[in-house]
Amino acid sequence: MSSINLTHHFLIAMPNMADPYFSKTLTYICEHNDQGALGLVVNRPIDMTLQALFERLSLSITDAALSEAPIYFGGPVQTDRGFVLHEPAGNWQSTLRVREMIGLTTSKDILEAVGRGEGPKRMLVTLGYAGWSPGQLEQELSQNAWLTVEARDAILFDIPAEERLAQAMQLLGIDYASLQDEAGHA
Image 1: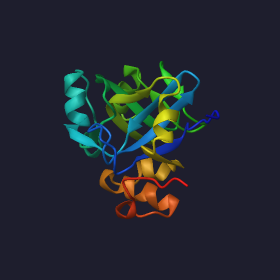
Image 2: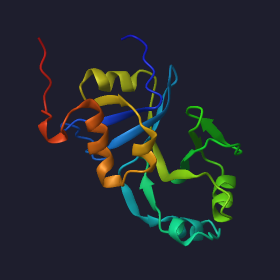
Image 3: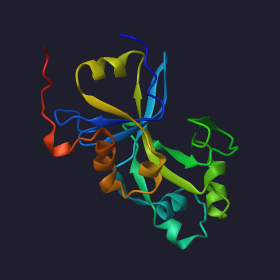
Image 4: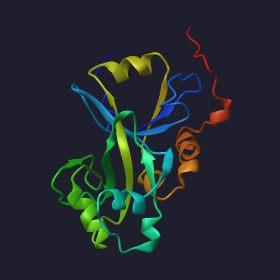
């Protein structure tokens, strides 16, 4: 299969996705190269708020509205570890720059800044991530497990979680309900 780079793309789980971790998910790919891929599920909030996460980490948060922001299930890998997808990318201790304005940070300094009201303008916090070994994502694509479309920042940060999958589908001009479980092959 030819080399593709799906960094800053959405993966839309096809209806036949049997893996319960990814059924009906929208996953944002933060990095994709010959070493594999790393992404975050961005439409599956868990029963935890930013306030609850901060309490677990013995941090305080001053913004009451922000304290109610949901935490998301980012994927089945390292579910005890936090990942902050944010804009602008900033200069944090451990940040993967996804693109010029978007970063993925795993260091605690970003949460400390958020607590002080000095964090990034827009962010999404997950526990865990989705990871693929070299060639694995390409194999899943060839098996029609995912649709892909270039990501839009507004879908990540401005659209409610329950609407993100449908919004990403609209980028392709497709209604999720109209998808078939099987792909046709000529």
